[in-house]
Length: 408
Ligand code: F6P
Image (cartoon, rainbow, N blue to C red; front, side, top):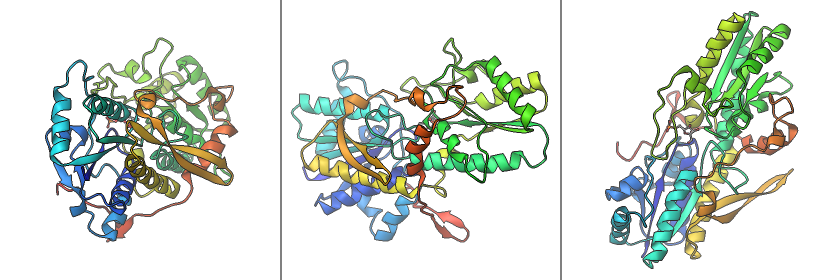
């Protein structure tokens, strides 16, 4: 078994390809012959739809371009394997394909749902006494993976959110008239990314006025009262809400506005429309103008506004995964451990995929202020190091240049 395979899974991030570059380079440095990529994660592996990544990364320039290209170069999927004890058909196909390509090392770059996939494959591997090693590489803009201090992808998305809050805030204040801008940020059940809107407060900007995270049940009447209080003091009010805020009975706020929200293979509802719904309620009850802004995929594909710290860590976890696999580990994922805040230092470690699979780490409640409207200094101390540094894309003829997909 002399080859490796790598896949990308779940929602993309602006730095997920830096992890792919990290895996590829470390694998090559350690004498791994061919590094295969799965076309759209395990779905591609099931169809034996693989690519020899080395054919696309045949120069240092291409690797550098990959690091600076957002979204998943290999293509992604949201695909849930059934436990092999229920049905082992797909496991047999996957292991047959892995053996056919002489794969000794399997790397999967993903979030909590992807950790479920690695845990299941590693456990089937142990059951059939396979020598293949399965290692996870963490990523998610949601930052909701357990055990790791933070997830690659979060720092860049947090930098994007804080940056656009500053810019939106300036725009909103320009007419001096009454307007409530409600910015909807991704994060289904954990508010890490919405919390990053608190980073916007600096000496040149008074900050986001009101923040609502899914960790706190959302009270619509209280929200309207808070906005009214703020509007009594200033005409332009800036609000950041998580797409996943829920009212006390467990319904997502976006479901109050519309009931059609499709679910993915892991049963997660597609959340959208929270900001629009809240603006319509505010307009109805308070008058004035409401401007909803759904950041949607912009916050996870902004390759022009990444954190250098994040890119470097994303690459580092990819390399650490290869070292772990070569050292004989399996069913593990790389995690980041923070050594110190000032100076900011992190190192990599390993955790068992089972411990991270399907579990969403929430924002600690004591990092939210007493009023449930803002973040505390502890959150700012945690998140500020993650957004440091910049790595610009390569610009060609005025636009960022990306490494095209291998299908092009
Ligand atoms: O990967 C996580 C995430 O970005 C969530 O915050 C969001 O709810 C979800 O992906 C949406 O992804 P998609 O609509 O692409 O499935």
